[in-house]
Image (cartoon, rainbow, N blue to C red):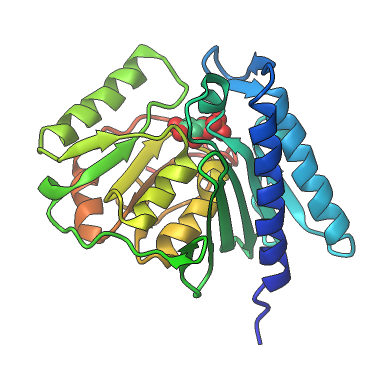
Length: 281
Ligand code: IPD
């Protein structure tokens, strides 16, 4: 029988809860901020501290296994996903929210084997909601099973997108042009929680029909990808081709009708893939 990675999954839930408690506590004192790729790409000491806690805990629990690790704060430029069992972690998804006290911040932990995502855990730590899914076993928020919305008419949908951290005018223009086109379909509304992981859990919960973004990283969306799929939803690249975790582009939706309708409106712009490989067109 194939390994169902149950022990790893259970431990990921435990570690995510512990990390969330550290983030909540850190939010009560002064937050030390620095920047990464641009002046609006924020990182705090808490991001780094929490990633260290997670990785140390995982390493000591699974010390005999040779698991690989991709973590937002440990990745300098590019990262490669191999066939080796790999943890993919965003210690604080929604760092800008965390800095500003905007109440959506998530710990995201995923596990991939042979480049296939086996499970994902997203702990929305300020709301105290534990979203989780194992491949083939359904998606849950705490003990409640999740299911995507059954809306097929885009005009009855709410869509999420984000602006990311690249402020170059030509990219911002394309982002807003896409948003305008989608808003004017018209849809019921456009939203954004400020964390990609939480946005995907909102798709999985049926609160919104879709979330798309160009510029996210694999650690923002790996756990959410399993949760969306297990709730009955789907993932695609923004060009309509199969979802590619390392491409930094994604549409997650409740069904293919909604996904394709959004894809029709997306103005694609260039981003460098997480693995540094040439972007597929
Ligand atoms: C960010 C959030 C945000 C998304 C950005 C991400 P971070 O992650 O997920 O919603 O728009 O593209 O980088 O930096 O807070 O971990």
